[in-house]
Every structure is written in C-alpha cells, then in structure tokens.
Image 1 (cartoon, rainbow, N blue to C red):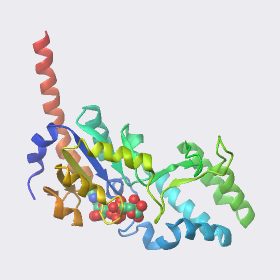
Image 2 (image 1 turned 90 degrees about the vertical axis):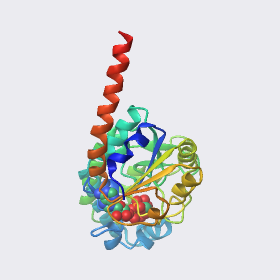
Image 3 (image 1 turned 60 degrees about the vertical axis):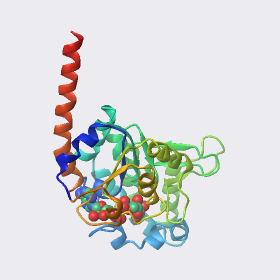
Length: 281
Ligand code: APR
C-alpha cells in the first residue's frame, strides 16, 4: 500500500471511471449486503434476491414480502448520499471522471449530482416493463407514502393490491411494471452494461470502491479494464479478490479516501484555473 497523496498525479490526468459497490453507501447508513447487520444475514438471498423466490413468496406469503419491502425501503429512505458520492459527482464536473459504474440500487449517485451513471443492478426507485423495456422512476415522496400505506395493510388481498397498484402499468403496452432491480440469475440490463463498457474503453484509471468483487457478471468489469491497460485502484478497508489486480490497494473507507484526495485535487484545479485566467487577462 502506498500513500494516497501519491495518486494525485494519476488522478489529475483524468479519464477516471469508478466501479462501485455497497461499501460506498455503508457510510450513508446502508449496511452492506454481506457485512454484519446486512440484509442477507436476516433474509435468505436465495429467496429474497431471486425473482422466482420472491414471486412465489408474494403469492403464498405476501406478509413476508411486505415486511422485507418495508425494512428495505425504511433503510433506503433514511439514508442520503455521503461525501464520497458527492466527491465522484465533483470529479465528473471537473471533467476528470468519465462515469460511474455502480452495483448499488440506492440512487445516491444521481442524488449527489452524477449524470454519467451505469446502473448494473437497477435502481430501487425505478420500475420497468419487461416487454417494452420502458423505465419509469418514482420519487422519494411517492415511495415514502407507499411504505406508510403498506405498513397499515394486514390482509393478503390488501397487501397484494397495494403493491401491484404502486408498481403501475406500462404506459405503452399496459402490462404490469416490475421493479427495476436485477435479481440473482437475471441478465444485466444491456443498455447499462453497454454504457459501462463505453466508459471502460476510454478509462486510464479505474477506482474500485467498496465492492467485494465476488458477484458476477459485474465483477468481470475490473478485469476487462485491467486488460485494456487501465491502472486499478482498490479502495476498501478489507481485502478482496480485486487486490490481486490492483496497482494500488487503499485500505481506507470511501469517505476517508475522498476527504484526503478531493482537497488536493481542488487546490491544483483552482491553481491551474487562476493561472489560465491570469494568462487571459
Ligand atoms: N468504504 C469502502 N468499502 C467498504 C466500506 C467503506 N466505508 N464499508 C465496507 N466496505 C467494503 C467491504 O469490505 C466489502 O468488501 O464493501 C464491500 C461490500 O461488499 P458486498 O456487501 O458484497 O457488496 P457488493 O460488492 O456491492 O455486492 C455486489 O451483490 O448482493 C448483491 O446485488 C447485490 O449489488 C450487490 C452485489
């Protein structure tokens, strides 16, 4: 491991892409999936993270699905983007970052102001039509109201109706919309994957932030980037398989990393701008 400040010359060159996972949002009070207190400790991912498992539970035990949805969205809605999400958005504004490829569905990148985002595993605020591929996004307030309503529903029929009504119908074919969340075993959304690869094809530096790097196919992307010659920086307080291909392993949290790196980049950014402005005068 080297000192974070040594990365500054590399980051200043730009053409950075970020590949992010749940660790990035853990400092937004969203526990990671596989960490202590994570969702998969309490809910069996073979049931709750697979479409088949969740659908049969929805038909036979909708109360269990309701409890899961309520717990998940209570956590999500109580969190907000942290310094690292804002840091990534700032790197994009400075034209240093080409885009973010995220496995997170919490929408924090967009909420922090990032515009170039490839959401490999979907977005918990979106629904889509599996036939037309139309994606519809609902806002925070709509979800807050939905969760409050859902908490009060007790009978099987009421719960099912509340959930189906909220998901709504496709504006084009009128088929039932589905949560835009990619479950285990489903293929990744092609447009998002294409977008992610288009960032990686131009990347000189890949920041892997807060991902265990064990969930495929998303975890192939850092290897692809490495083969194309990008420098890999792995930011994670724990060791992961991505350490093996990383040029730099930074044993820091995502927020700490940005708290060190951003002020230095800001200083050099504004110094160059001052010099450019003085030259123009
Ligand atoms: N900063 C950086 N990294 C952190 C932090 C932090 N503050 N806190 C935890 N981490 C690291 C952990 O050490 C771990 O390696 O974040 C990683 C989180 O790993 P996972 O929980 O496996 O999350 P992720 O890699 O995003 O999982 C991929 O699996 O469950 C599915 O679809 C879900 O998108 C998710 C996918």
